[in-house]
Image 1 (cartoon, each protein chain N blue to C red):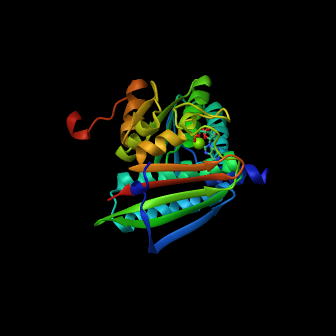
Image 2: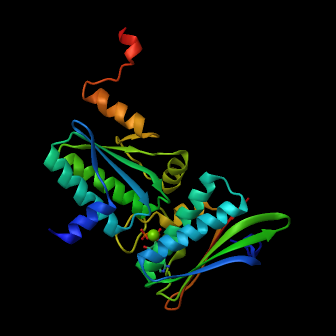
Image 3: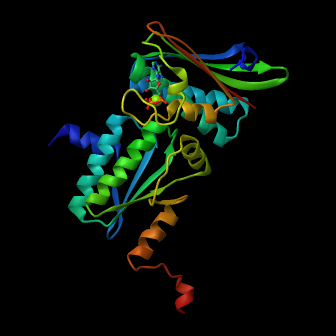
Length: 137
Length: 142
Ligand SMILES: Nc1ncnc2c1ncn2[C@@H]1O[C@H](COP(=O)(O)OP(=O)(O)O)[C@@H](O)[C@H]1O
Ligand SMILES: [Mg+2]
């Protein structure tokens, strides 16, 4: 067992939320070491599971400075190369404002305020939908 | 920025952080959030001020081998606010006007940190002497 690797994934848990959909929450403050760890873990898991979407939830990130924003953009580009698209959730009005002040353009990245919105976006792209049981009666 | 634009440091509520490694940035950022919240800033301003502090602290790490950030409560007339002061004894900034431009960086990074701090805060002022160091002050008023 590679202890360092185990500790890395303990600090940065990633889960399969649904077939083809991974979920990774980020809390605290990103620095380049942690951003690299997160990128490694996401790429490894995307590769191992063949997932099509990763929901990266940054609601718990305490500040988005230019370095953090740059890391986030890099992470999403890297997963895309593996055929796994990152959906950035937790784009609260706070985060959005900071991004505007930074002048960071998230381009055509899918961003949502809530994780549920991100899940919905992934579902709809995978041709799935959530239906209330009542509607089926 | 004029002298007037600076805030007077208040005796109470002063937090000082030495910034020599990444972990110090996170600590200072937490202190900044706490202070801004206690002063009564909205969550979105708390986030913005914390982001500005991270930007200044990381500049000291990347461009000046570290320094100190001080977080002050400040007041002017009857207004209260928060003041961030980042002081280092690094190489200084040769051309401040250039450093304040979007996308200018001497390290090949994004070069949007200083101009973003200016946009996020109400006032910002840089004092720098090449070969001696840099002091950046930024204020946000309630
Ligand atoms: N504390 C500092 N000491 C020396 N130079 C600095 C400092 N902060 C900023 N600079 C200079 O100003 C430039 C612009 O800074 P910034 O806008 O934060 O962009 P970046 O950090 O990505 O280079 C830096 O590349 C550097 O040359
Ligand atoms: Mg910078």
